[in-house]
Image (cartoon, rainbow, N blue to C red; front, side):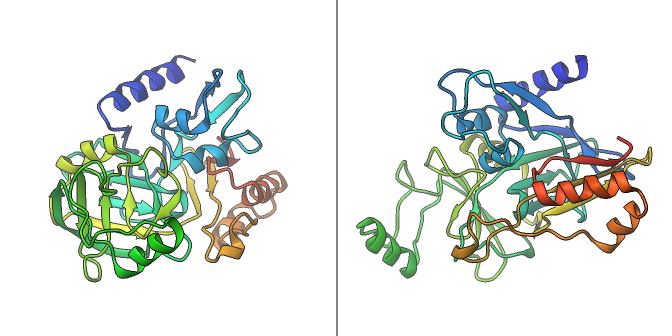
Length: 303
């Protein structure tokens, strides 16, 4: 109880200063944080609560299946996905795991702390690609130059004629800060937003969208040249120093419009299957995690 209350206070403080901070785990561990719980108040939506804890909207829905995202019943106890398994990739610079709609920041000059943020990514048809790249440019008050395809889309779907260049200001969808990636022609950005929705969802034209308060904090921390890795790992697992085996399974990204809203299979790796072989309880728990895809760590052995 004391640990849970302490983390709640830490998370509240971190939200106030526009950053969610985690203690970096030991080299032989990948499990960070502890799970939080929240009782819904009258009039709150999951989007409100996601912002309160600075977690993604879809992540909160994954962890609380069956709860109405717009009108959750007051008194409902929600699981807040504040415990997680680090992705299987080098933990340096910025790591973006598309499947979990999270951005991880591992400061080069701080071996004790790391930071995790919810993000919006490219929608179906304009998917954010996997890449290994770096921050090539940092821009305050960016302008937006929509592509010909985007201008056509706005014209046909929204009856809006976009200008060739949208100046900085409240009408600019890039928000107040942007960091350009060197991948390709530099068309992909990590940026803020002028909208009050879309974080933790697939809504962008391929860029990585952050809450305004999150990028306001992150922007001055990240120097140009910082490594950026964009991966897609719906299944993560870890064997902790005490021998406990955990998995975290997220809903795979839809590749086509037909897949949106359908259940998509996640398969266990051979090494994970070998780890639970002949342990019927662990096998059953793994099968359940792969099916439910709650996006929260589940102990298969120990824990």
